[in-house]
Image (cartoon, rainbow over all chains, first blue to last red; front, side, top):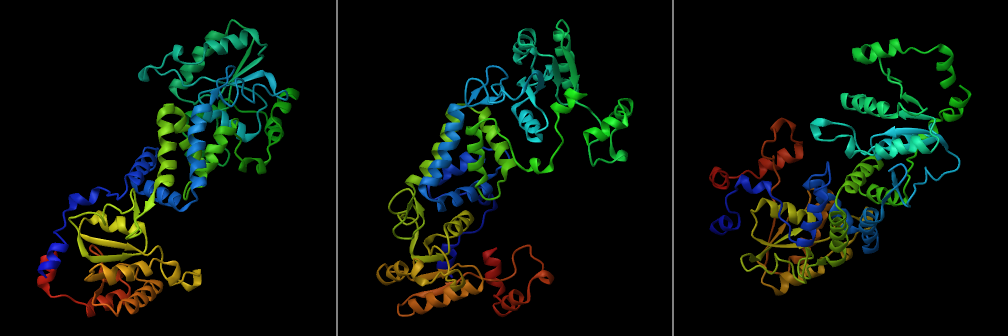
Length: 224
Length: 224
């Protein structure tokens, strides 16, 4: 067993935490994948080994699509949404109601609302929310361009579709003060009990607000 | 409410299944990510939006690392492991015992064994396992090169480290028949109760085998 003992040196548990790669190319690719949110080293390795089994052209296409996306992406100069051109497809569409502007925090919120296919106006992406704790003031957000749009482009209604948090309420308050000077209707998206939500599990604030903002039954039936 | 009704056309649930992108570049990148195993459209979108927030150079580096990995990867001409050169770093290492060859199914198994840091011999990657149902016969695997290695390169021991399945046993049987002609010791990795595993939950086959292949206590203490 003298030879066996040489072949298998005593186990050290500290060793087990590292991953050993026989190829620097693979190690590099795994490390890049592992930088993504929610992807650890083991998942990264699984993805890399999957790509290794694919055709070279397919993997090149993958890498190229990611790099090109970041290189060529533009932000719409009207609404600050992501765009393939100077003005995004929503802002340049002729079938949308240009007098209604929905103010959202991020690109993700635009996508969420677009996916409902229920809104036919335009958007305005603030690029964040007023949050003094994080050092984000009104100057870091796309507020100036919103005021300009309201002032010069015949906007009749601004819908505030920001998260119902303290920062969201601060932002709504700040924007409504800025826009008070113009003849524009300011609304917020409805807060209330979600469809499928149960009353007993709703927090008091939401429940109280949903009672005080109750709607006539006709509008409920109509919207349904 | 006539205008409101126009603004919000009636909800159709079939709409909710699709994702609408305002940018073809983003749609493309999301689709590429969603091709990876275990990554759906929502996760893909989250990853893409994360990359969108990074520096262009960093995202280029990501895409490049993936594409370059696939383009430049080579397979070691000795053991068929992934490699950055013609012969992999394990096969070309001077500190490894070249007379011991561990036969494994895939690259992943090499990594798993390497991560234990307990094995100091060489490997031979079969590239699969004999499985008539999947149409994989001995000719599709790297068996010929294994026989050549055993015949000409002074291999003294071949360790069969394949999965304990019917296909694995078939492969071991086939290989042992092929190698019988040469003066080489053939071993398999130990099957038994895993560390931390409980006896009562072990299947009968494993338990029976681990009793019949019992070891003297000295070797247990030595290996621990």
